[in-house]
Image (cartoon, rainbow, N blue to C red; front, side):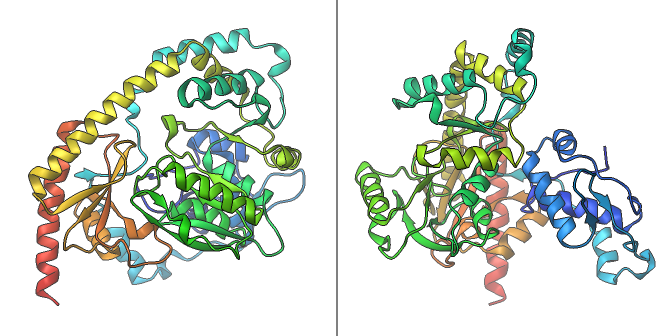
Length: 441
């Protein structure tokens, strides 16, 4: 529908892909002047993305003059956009003829094995939840989320992490991206600033940058953020991934956690803890909001999209209540542990002693340091043209130059045989690439 296909393997964000696809349809005359765009809710459901992602794509179209929006009316295509196709540049024409190779080694990060999702069990709990849902919950239920789901999340946090959490402090979101947008608005000041781990998830940090925040990087080592590098002059929020640092994988030691909290108290700052790969949740997320911020959070969420769909919340609550969620997570942890070991074995076979892993033995990707190698955008682009999808750690660095010898290798979505083949192909490509690179120095 709407002729939009998203490629989640690209480094281009989903919101920008949506923006580009719609913009191109406007320029090419596929979407005519005055044509209404689909509602953000409809397009989000069709493309399986968050509504906030579509909202941001529409905002970009409006800001750049491709579309216009009026209160109470759909967003529509403006006039005067159609370009003469014969006037395309030679570069554009050449680009259209370049074949995009299929991937032979897909080391995409943050990708679980969707083939393992318990569809039958989910279908049954979804039908049960829908059949038993009181009619009053079929409409808008407020910005905090279904109380049943919040209570089950609190129970899950207690039995899985030993955390005692009040369900009243839990707020349901459409995922991490929407949550961070709300946090960025919630903590915004006249001169917004923040501290962030470096390296970090650079896409997530863009959420704050696009809202005007000045980001100060704090270096990371094998154990996470280096708290001794925190500046006392800072007064904004601090973005961290202490449970499994992204992208290097370290677990923040208890002493550093305590120092981080002491620092935040001294500065009057909030710590934004992103538990990004915890239990591999997608489409539905949750935030533990400090009570002094909850009133404003509810107001912000009310004027964004009010709530998540009630059916999915009810189904997830039932999934948690019956412990089907627990059993699925236990099975997937065992699977990913085996696949991580398969990756380590393949690296040892192919690269000998020229590499070492970073981080804790968990997650869906591995940060790998390769002795004597330097990975940059040129390496990434050449690899992609050869059918290898991998991301240098430098891509996620705010200050460049400290992690040039590291690659991120996602493995969660790959079978052991696929992992072995992919590492072999990566080794062959890297050997040829650096040999050629040395020849032209």
